[in-house]
Image (tube, rainbow, N blue to C red; front, side, top):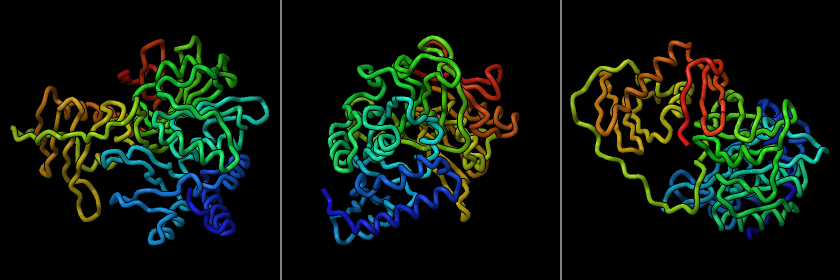
Amino acid sequence: MTTDPDLAQATTRRAALVQALADSGELTDPAWRTAFERVPRHVFVPYFYDHMGRRISADDADTRDAWFDAVHEDRALVTHRTGGAATSSSSQPSVMATMLEALRVEDGVGMKVLEIGTGTGYNAALLTHRLGNDSVVTVDTEPDLIAAARTRLTETGYEPNVVLADGAHGHPDLAPYDRIIATCRIDSVPPAWLRQLTDGTGSDAGQILAPLGNALVRIHRTGGPLQAEGCFLPGGAYFMPLRHGTVDGIPVRRPALPTGKARRTDVPASALADNAYRFLLSIVEPHLDWQYDLDDAGKPTAARVWSPDGTIAALHPDGTVTEAGPRSLWSRLEEAYRVFTEHDGPGPERYGLTVDHEAQRVWLDGPGGPCWSLRP
């Protein structure tokens, strides 16, 4: 365990961060503000890795000051690496505040919350500060993360139920839950989460808040155990994916770029910098691996994209594209761009999600609008 910095200095820096979150409008609920003021992030993030993979730590005299500054800034910090790849992080506090407020918890009514993705334990501590030890269950699939989070939670006086489990399965032993919050990206809503929600309708219905694609979706029970519906929230939400079992750390290999005949495309390189269009792509084609060429202003001029099925495409500076693999990936991107432009470039807040038994559909401007089926 690291040696604590000066507590007064940490309290002052934490208060300054909370005030900044309040001033920017991300933190508006007084109860959540109190939680952020009281829960010390620096205890839960005793080290992190910078963009070069260097360990920045409270225990290292050479990096201690940089560590202390970073944990009191509105920054996401990589806290776990496997095989050279980032596999866990402490989320940006402003995003955490947005998610916790969007969770719509109520005090004093015995509300129970399941958190998928314990990570450092910091978010679980915030939830526990607000709701109490018996009202929070948090799960993660990594034994070392769970052990460290449990230690830090105990050190700071919080004792939620910390469980080593595959997050996709939730935790049925302590179900049902009034709220389920995921701090990891999903491609579709695991049926187990829906089954573990409380019954009810309207404001009493169980709710799930999770990053789907690269935006947050909030859905509520609308009928039977596998029926739910809701809408996406404005803005982006970029999280590491939900993991199943332990992480093997094997990096993804990119196939060679295509060298075949080029064709014209209607998707301009500038569209690839549009977060609203990128949200639609995260639904239509999840898990794409992108690489860009940028101009002096940081705008894309060309791009390469790989799909997990081995399909690849390259957008060239002259507005042409070449492809290779089992299907036409770029045609899917063009189809999405056509819908995007025909509907005036909608942001995530114009999309919703309907779950009906095992089928899940993302729709635009209502269940009767353009829709895309999610892959289980």
